[in-house]
Structures are given as C-alpha cells and as structure tokens.
Image (cartoon, rainbow, N blue to C red; front, side):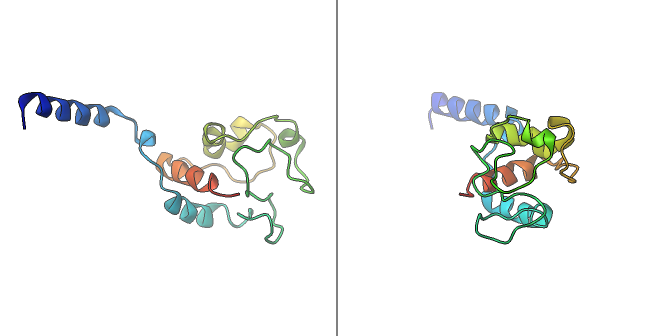
Length: 127
C-alpha cells in the first residue's frame, strides 16, 4: 500500500472514531427485542392486533401525534402537533414527559442511546 493510500485509510479510521455512538448504524432486529421488553406490554406493533393500553405503533414514523383513530389520547398528546420522525422519536423515547408535558404515557423513558436508536430503527419498519 502506498503512503498516500495508508494516510487516507488512517484518516478515515480516525474520523470514524470521532463519531458519537448514536451515529453508528442502528439494528432493527435488536430494536425488536427492545420493543418486546419495554413497549409490547402497552403497544401493539400491528394495526390488526388486539387493542392494548397504548395506541398501535404500526406506522408511527411519519404519523401525527394523537391521530390513531379510536384511541383516547390525553389532551397533551392530542394537542402536541408532532409528526413522529426518527429525529422526534429520539428525545420522546428518552423522556416522554419532557417532550410532551402532561402525557399519560406511564413509561419514564429509555436512557440507553444504543437501545433507543435500535428501537427507533425497528419502529421505522412498522407499517
């Protein structure tokens, strides 16, 4: 390998080391496990499944907050006027009550950045 090629490789590796952990590729399969562990008690991943305490999360990415027909949302969630993008879901899943004060969602939040990124990758697969 030439000195120029070696310098380019080392430079790229150095730049990767500077990326924050959340910038790495998320793992939707690992996110499904997180979903089953922390979300599935209250939320269904499909629109056709049984009704649970929380609204279905099928199609959550790209959906407006408080908009699942037939689900009774808190006033805070109904009026939040948030479109759930992956970027908006991140702080919400970290601390729901901070993002939507008055939410009735009982979950305190997922503090682990990698687990949250994986969960969001999984949620993005739900249609």
